[in-house]
Amino acid sequence: MHTPVAKLLRSRGGVCHTSPDVSVSEVVRVLHERNFGSILILDSESKIQGIFTERDLLRRVVAVGLDPESTDIRSVMTRNVFVVDKSTARIDVHQIMERKHIRHVPVMDGQTVLGVISLRDILRSENEEKDFEIDQLKGYVTSKPYPSYPR
Image (cartoon, rainbow, N blue to C red):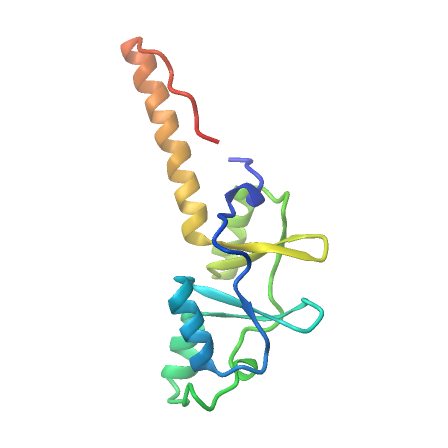
């Protein structure tokens, strides 16, 4: 419950990012190749300029009939990205995501981007914790030894 969100980041080849000057179609290719749901838009100093998600693709490109080849990501990315510190508790990030209606949040260590936590990552962690608690309760009821919690 109070697990720091940084512990939930999975190593998938680093932070998925691009510059603000690429086209939407190039970004979609990267998302598809790496099987990511979001990509950070960073400037030349690795500062976050925005984030682009599958939802942005649907709402800001497809739904309004923009050409992905000729549309720069800068014009359709989400600006003013909400970020969390690596020590923020999982439950707090989940509540923020629900309140702000967002599914992807960059995790920071000071000015350094560690990764992006998704709602799926949060829910997976919560389910693992609940499964562990259920196993412990079953063990208590049946007097079997407790399994060790995977951390």
